[in-house]
Image (cartoon, rainbow, N blue to C red; front, side, top):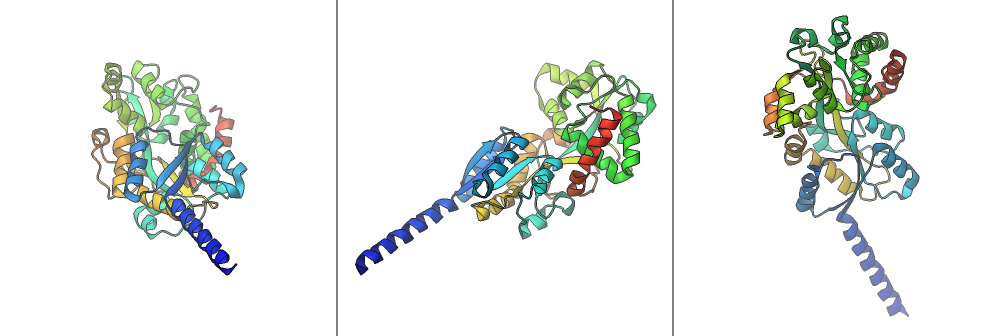
Length: 339
């Protein structure tokens, strides 16, 4: 009888060891990034660590709802997405775990992280203008977009899109709610047409003369710059890019980032993964693969489009502050008529 008990105990210990080993080699990633270039990023992590990534991709809202429904039994270890507001939403739902990582704290600048989530790449919100229709001197700042001299010349995407909400959140941080609303009303008054389409559509509309100026994320510009399609080359010949607010607050950036979930069954692997995303090698993937800037300032990249766009002064408002301002901005845009 005693021998049976000892055998059962040994079997149980072996099973537990096997389970631990299996767990040590897995990371469950819920991702709202939908870029093919990320495949190499994840494959390299597995190659370096032996940790297999099980990935589920969907929209931010769908993933957050899934995590909430799964509750304490959620298999998700890491949630990553684009834009600070979406990360803040996960934070507001109390989904992220506060982690202590000297690697992340030393590599990710303070303005690009909160206590619960981190930025791994950035995109600048630039001004694109038609070289034959608009004077560059008239569009040097975001504030200029509300100037009546641009009446009927501005193309933008929806005011409810996180990229524009993030820009509005920056305006609130720099100028306060009242001034930000005045700016939004001025922007709406300058619309060439009702907001529609994505950032690439705005750039193409500027090139076609449908409008004179637009705002777009820098990586859409870089994609067109790197394109071999004759029609894309023609677009870029017609437009020029401005880094806004270089003499004042700096160009607004929005982000891609992520955090470890409180219920993560593989928390150590999750932290390893975030630290990997902050490594030089992974940071280069973000820049060269998807035309984003690394969040780690010392990383050197070799993206010809980013190099052609040149260096710029970025704003330094903490991403957490920008995220918290966005619900206010949505109300401002609604009142201003930026639909």
